[in-house]
Length: 113
Length: 114
Image (tube, rainbow over all chains, first blue to last red; front, side, top):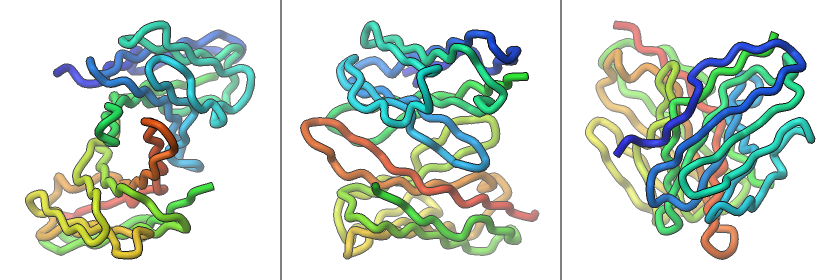
């Protein structure tokens, strides 16, 4: 089992640029979660999907953020345009319907300069 | 919304000492989980608790699901340097259908001095 795979591990971009973060959940898991971690706010849930359908996106900061899950094995989180305050570590996690335990990826450290 | 209060925020201990941290909630949870995050990595599950009153051990780690279902604690016995990291509690209240949404505490930063 390869676990939850996120890419890239690190991303440095200039303000105003588009950023796309990628996630491959564990095979067989049907729930996928995007989190943002900062020192000030800790772990914040941005959005989660169940069976590829967005269920709750109330944590998405603003319209600059969007997430998609075109199939059971892939999800993206896009920020357009990016701003310095978006700098954080973004985690993807997945879980199975019948076991409420999240498995996290290693995260993407985003720096917007 | 649901909130978790995790304490202490940070701890500095000597190798060999025991550690205790806890989480309290304003809401009742059906599941309590404890995660550890190493630097540069994502949180990794340590212990999962599914029943009120449940006491579960995983090596030197012991965690309990409070009787009121509003709290949980994690104990680490005989700490070692590799216990360093951030420990998170998380609670889950099943929200309709098959959707599981976890609420995380702010974390406890543990430093172990050799």
